Length: 238
Length: 238
DNA sequence: TGGCCGCTGTACGATTTTGCACGCACCCTC
DNA sequence: GAGGGTGCGTGCAAAATCGTACAGCGGCCA
Image 1 (tube, rainbow over the protein chains, first blue to last red):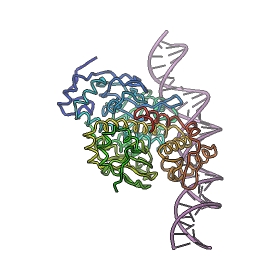
Image 2: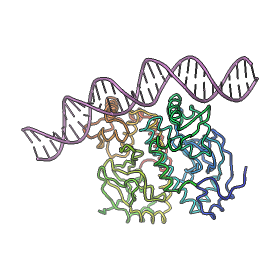
Image 3: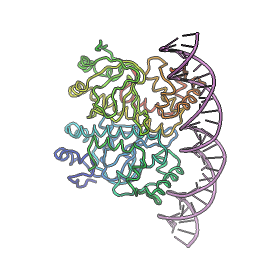
Image 4: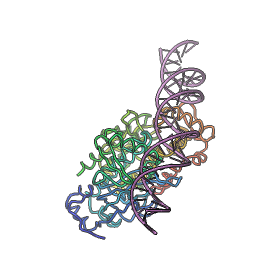
């Protein structure tokens, strides 16, 4: 399953590494397919590798006593899946599930630990990403508590848009409803309002951002706070 | 403001350090008073020290566009305030505000960085704590989105109880309402229900846990998931 | 001792969200 | 091209929560 790794990886963490450090990492990285609904790591089970998404994105989910799951964070090409391995353990109570298919560069746990030992730039970078991700999760907590469905949906669309290649991505209202923790019908109503406002568009199983600026203007500040913090810690998108 | 540091600090992170590592840290630690409403670090301003609470606890708050704040995490003697300094930056978009007064051991930023360089046990421990705190924040996100006021209040009381010395602590409904992001009147109703059920008790400006087991039973699983993860990563309370 | 301010109890209508349900449209498969 | 499964639109009553308001009570200060 290995493949040629470009010199300038599409994953933003990898592309932020100094060339030498990236070169040392390169032979251990393996390009893998991210199929929709694929589980990169399950709750409380060993995490056998970290993944640096190139395209597509992954939801971090927590399992509720009711049996369904709630999204607590989103990881795309700006990040890495498998932070527990950086922080000193090989498992997590959360599940990492692929939301939008794509590809990722995979680094097995053991190789990742070795790389951390040898590569100070990687350590530094990933610790900063840890904080940025923490901010994303924390802001999700605030947003969930304070803002209503339409604003939260707008924020979610912006986060998904940032992690997509084009303006559209596969997504159903049903799926979104479990991500946001609201009824499917509630998503339909909110999405309908955003669509009538010309900010988004959707068709069966697919959603599009049609007015990025408008969507940002109509969303709560939560999105922007997280973006600003990411940029401060890890630099502008590139 | 320095004071004698006991060999067995009440802060659980410090007490988990090997004796030698703790001994090296000890001369740099300064016991300071945590006065209620004191700001340990303000949003986007330099964090000049980390704090290891001994008694009392601190809320991590995010500022919303509306001007009020939302709680995203709680730190007591199980943790440390100032994680951004561990992760490679000296500021955070969040505010660390003392909720319940007490004392903490303070380590200036520069001494903290030196200690991290020299002390592998401290690094390891704090990275594991970073993950545990991240889990707390993530579960708060899920809880805010899914559970209703009474359950969230029960969870909050349990978290506060864990971080208190006795069964009671100073707290008003008004303050709790801004923490939970609900109306003050909503807190009064929920707290009244928990009190009638015999799980908690309160008086003007003060709240008590009267039936810890009952409160755990009546709360959502969010509390327990976070506790289990903390214990897995950092050991049982001690 | 009197007055005031802050904390709690309660009420009311308005708004948001829920749970449930049904109909229609699309798409894949047979 | 018929059938079945999936996704979206909509409606309705119930529940949760909100915004607001006011009254009572306790403690502090003048």
